[in-house]
Image (cartoon, rainbow, N blue to C red; front, side, top):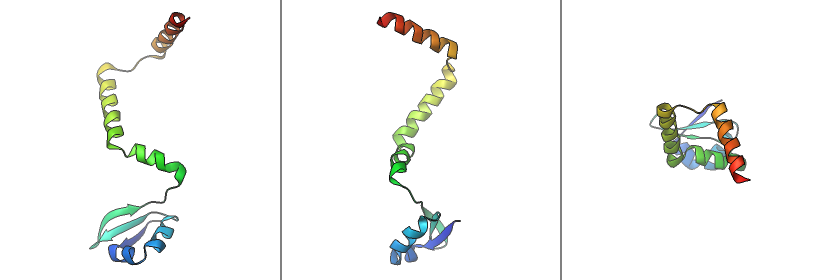
Length: 91
C-alpha cells in the first residue's frame, strides 16, 4: 500500500514517516506533486541497491550490452572449447 506525505508532514514527523515506510513505500509530495519516495531497506540489501543505482555500473552495463549487440554472444560450445584449451595450457 502506497502512502503519501507532504514535505511539511515529513519535516514535522520524520521518525513516524520512516516507521510507516517499513510497511510500504511513502511518496513525498511538494505542492501536490511527487518529489521522492521513501522505501524501507535492510542492511543486506543496501550494497545491492547502491551498486544497481550506481551511474558507473549502469554505464558499464550499457557498454556491455552494446558490445553484445555488435559482436553477438558466444555459444556454449565455444566457451567450453576455450575453457578446455586453457586447462591444457596451464598444466
